[in-house]
Image (tube, rainbow, N blue to C red):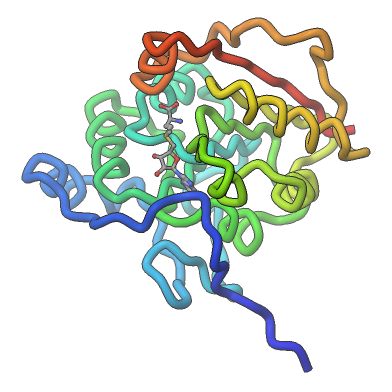
Length: 236
Ligand SMILES: C[S@@+](CC[C@H](N)C(=O)[O-])C[C@H]1O[C@@H](n2cnc3c(N)ncnc32)[C@H](O)[C@@H]1O
């Protein structure tokens, strides 16, 4: 029997030290219980065990449409976008613990109650923690661009990931993406357009999604002269 491979060799992030500054540590200790969902791991601290499960109604204290954000970083856009959508529950996957700590501080200061964070790889999270057709909306903003050709295999949005994400989107669900790397935008468009379960809502180019605040990453891209591309697809 072929054993299920639980540890992917190529991941979309760098495994960095999770050392936190004093303020981040304090935020983590104070607010982790309220917002961070613990999951069973396999080999690494950002992995998700194949048998791990989440009880989302218990975690959010209600049943509501589920928005998933992949890689919110320090949560600059997550917190205000979640606030603008009180009718939805927002589950964020972020691998970098110091960034998660910063998200927690903002959630607590803003009294935001509809966000929970899983500090794990979103690929494994979608695979093991989210039910088929479980997502009402998916956000992927400025995923790590991995600009060098030899690193392109690390890019999150590839054909395999699109296949997984589409299985997790419910009918009519929207997947919003943004990047400031033209060739990554082209790669995204190619793999998203190729999936029969998705339609491009703006085949001639989407306008910037106004609800999405400009983050440091976006600002940095603009300052470096890169154009930002927004994409929006719908699950058919
Ligand atoms: C370039 S930053 C963008 C942050 C934020 N979306 C923004 O627009 O400011 C990418 C983020 O995605 C996270 N990340 C990368 N791959 C991930 C994965 N597979 N699962 C969860 N988070 C991931 C990184 O740790 C980082 O915080």
